[in-house]
Image (cartoon, rainbow, N blue to C red; front, side, top):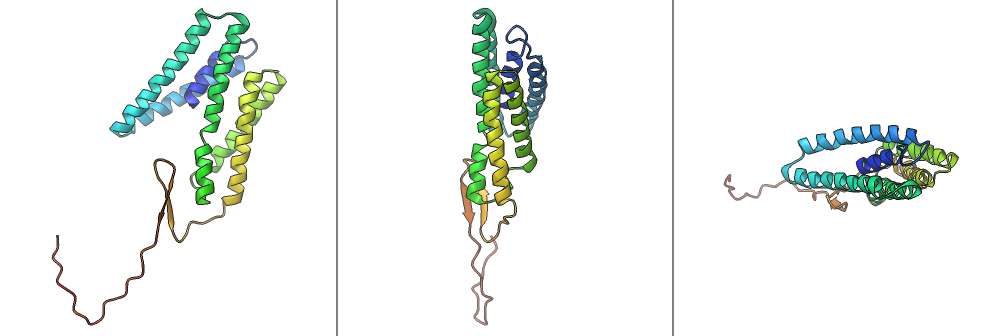
Length: 205
């Protein structure tokens, strides 16, 4: 989602789509390059089944971006082009910022922040805030709205971190599963040492 957001935002910032937004284009273009490297590294080291799934998602990302770019380039002009590209960038930017909601749910469920790194939450907040202010000053709703959402979400993550940061996991081990649920691993009951009673012979398997 971050890769798709960066691609669409970089396209939106190009001069023939929206004027005076070159900063948006250059920064998100750099982000798209970094995210592409992340995805390729993940694909290279992922298991075969996961690799096929991520390759499919990667193909979908490129397809969506290509469709937006081609439609805006050949079918739309002027404000129509800006509106179309801005809406696409806004939608996927909100989806990108909303992706950590599952982690926030996990933090509340486990009462532990080990699944939500502090610096990631901090920079989500700082990034969202800075772009929100940039969008307000430039009177660009397509920049201000999604990043205002990201600013609020980042602030919520920092609040959760401040609430649960000192919690220690003890007693029962809580392990997140692939679907985001939490498994409770109960401690093994105390086993008493055998007395003088004879134990049956156990064959090694």
